Structures are given as C-alpha cells and as structure tokens.
Image 1: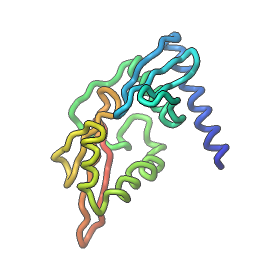
Image 2 (image 1 turned 180 degrees about the horizontal axis):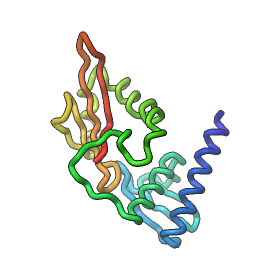
Image 3 (image 1 turned 135 degrees about the horizontal axis):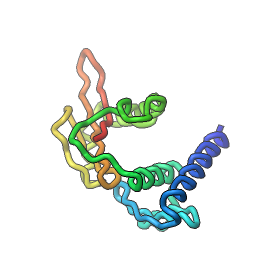
Image 4 (image 1 turned 180 degrees about the vertical axis):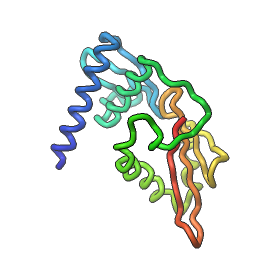
Length: 166
C-alpha cells in the first residue's frame, strides 16, 4: 500500500513538473504557502522550504506546482463568494477524499471545542470570520483564501465543519 501511494505521488509530481516546464520554460519561482516561503527550481525539480532549508514533502510539492501552473495560466479573481469543494471545477471525483482528509479531521479535532481553531489566527496570520459559530479565514497561497467554518453541536445534531473557497 505504501509503495502504491508513493507511486501516485511520484506520478503526480512528474506530471506537474512537466506541465510547469512547458509553460515556465525553466524559470524559478518563489511561493508563500501558509507561514513558509518556498523556492521552486524546475531545472533540478526541487521545491525547497526557505524557513528550514529542506525539500517540501511530495503532497505539498504537488499543491505548490499546481498553484504556480494555475497562476501562470491565469488565476480567477476573488469574488467574495464562498463555495464548497464540491462546487470547484474538476473536484467532483475527489470530494470523498477531501472530506475524509480535511473536513472530518477538522471536525474530529475541533468539533467539541470549536474555539480551539482560533489558534490558527496567530499561527498562520489568519483572521476570525463572523460566518458560522466559529469561522477562520486563512490565506493559504497568495490570493487563495479559504474559510474554515465550525458549527457547535446540540442535543439534536452533532458538530459540523466545512472548508469553503473563494
């Protein structure tokens, strides 16, 4: 199983590097992701964290490469309209994985104590949002805000979480 997952990451990285090569022609890039900066060197196919001088993990490298590719091709502008993962173009087949790896993890960690997520405001220079019982607005990449919403449970319903995109 581990080798299968590694193979998937390796294939995804290779495909993303090739796509970047086609549009960036070997130019290096710097990218801010959450509270770290990364340098992307297409010639050596290396993504390096500038804060700790180590290569980015494969899953993060895939995100960074896809962000750069999208930015170079033309990023949609921020509209102030929040949509769910399911509403993102091309995301239909990935929702169950996203829910399991992101939404369910947030709900499990903060569902009983939603105010605990407010620690993100200090750690990632995020802002509290008035949406939901507890909402946190995080700029993941430059001009890529996400809104994490948490709803407290009651005697009828359990706690809920969601991640929304602009």
